[in-house]
Length: 95
Image 1: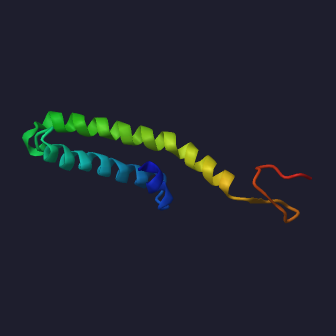
Image 2: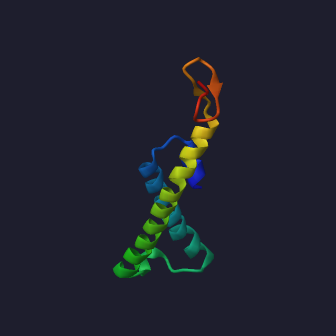
Image 3: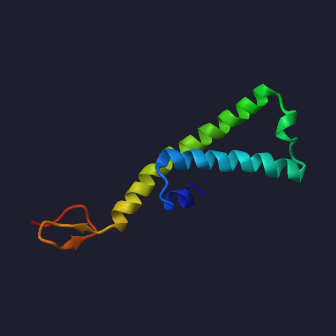
């Protein structure tokens, strides 16, 4: 899911916040519908805060881990232009 969000062009923090909303919001809809968990309004405030904290840590860690991967992918996928006008997929140019 994080890769799909990055491909939309959202900056890292916005994609991470949207990822958190999708994952946590999805849990609040899907788990009660499957009968696995009670609806969120039946939890206490402390349980909701703990659940949100865990999902925030997950989304943040995923965003931090994904950021260098996405950057490396974009650098490798984008040809660089050297001073002589040639293009190379490598970071260094021959001079």
